[in-house]
Image (cartoon, rainbow over all chains, first blue to last red; front, side, top):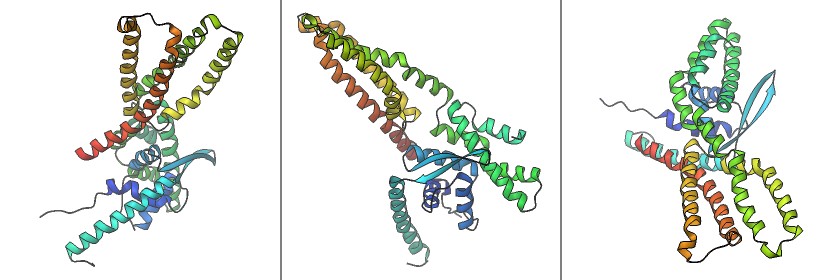
Length: 109
Length: 211
């Protein structure tokens, strides 16, 4: 029997961009946001979040600033215009693909 | 910082450049502190909360592999320092400015000295800005691409300069070289920036295709 699963690792950048579309946020808040809103379904190892964030920053999708909070430096990430555009494209693509899969698996069309 | 977190971070950042390592340690320490605060509020002891927070970070080797795809390593940092070293830039600017000064030939005036005296410190003053502009969004692969490209262009220029007299069958004054050299330098800078930003994207596409 084939086991079908969605590739969360590949979707993580889009999920990060979506979390940031709600406002500037730091790494822990982004991870908690994704897990909470997906009711724990989209679970991932939090150590992989930071390389993904750094890649998004290097690609100009997000920008970051560091702030001192309670004696600890915290880095806040903000969605850029380029990131917002990429998020919109990813959402459209996701809707197209999920619609097709739903159609194939007998779900809502 | 606890020993457990320290050893996770040491493993995840092994071989990464110091600047990158500092940022990662800072971010993940803050992340773990938040996670511990949350877990202790849920009733776990500090030690249990920390163990859970580190477990949630996942495998440190997998994190390191992911960081190595985006961050500079120690050897990249050394390479980058060599590439962006002041002497390299000064030499390049000198390469352009000296022919400019010689261009004066018989018509040498104090203005050439004044212009030289103004241009050189201005360029060196803007050097960090130029470097940032060139490399802020480049990846390690981009820097390597730039280095290879620069070496090829520099070698070609040196060969051309060395053999120009035999190529053109007449002596060429150093002053006459300032315009082509200036154009070459600007083209090199623009090409470096383009390469530094394009190369990682190309390599990323290759990696995705392989995956």
